Image (tube, rainbow, N blue to C red):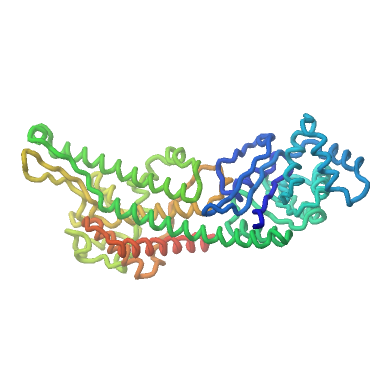
Length: 476
């Protein structure tokens, strides 16, 4: 069996090598820092799908003394035919030499058979130092491609394109932090064309990665559907003894249960966030810090969340929201505006449900204290009775999925879940709308879903995810 390809990512210090490795290996644990010298020893990062290693990225230190290395090579070479052996001799002779520690670490995987991914910063000018690096790499005789990964604001990419084209078989612009998934696959296909023995494994790798991406979307839809069903149906309970009933007012019990209900719903949403992030192998997203900076405007129960993620009356009407759709709500509940931007909140509860007050038409979660039975009483709060709550959770979850699925593993910025400015769900097909609405209705009535209903719900959620993806792409 042909071994999986190995690519050594090489270049000048602090020019984005580790970012490229993190993105192409889907590993956000790789250290990325602004100061040079973060990587001092080569380290391998295999990318595996279903236990099969598709390829391995080797992160290497940056060149430190390329012109001195080139001088040594030129002094010890007789002809172009011995260039690869001369590079190998340099590595063998200078192991342990403090002057060339980084160069030996960088060149070792190449003399062992790795392909070359040379990374340059297109925002800095081309120099003689870079030319020495590229000449050394050409001496190895290994398949090679170059990536222009611009870090700063200036643009010297045209000069780089001309220079790199003289040394490398393929030259591409590649933003390690923002490059879309298709560009990852394109790089693999390009390398497969450079080395015949790698063509088959890299074609297989692109198929595996494309299939993995589709599977992750399916799994994300299922997890979002599961969380939605759970949150819509959730009911907070408390057992009260006769003494507690006598000592505690209904208002106090309601407040306690309401706060526990709120807290649990927030926790369930955060669990969903972590599940999706881990599914896409994002283990170190700095989302918690971002949430602290958002303060109340980006909380699940904030007014801005309802405004940005609630659906319009037109959507609800086409989804089958009418008389009897919400227990205790008449058809005139549809009079709330399409922007959901006006109205007064009903206590803290309407905030939880994501609804606005129009008289007492909307049935909301409320405290219910049952009759005394065996010396005990049961107090309950929930489930939520307003479908708008489900749409707020859905919108936030789909946006988070989209951000995570399109986030490269080189990203280190805070995750910014910007709210939608358009009722994108209105572009969803009618059948999927109705499936989502019916499931919300069933869950809030605490009617269990069978396997078929769960699958249909997850399928409708996935269509909503694709609808959102289209909207974001068309939005530019």
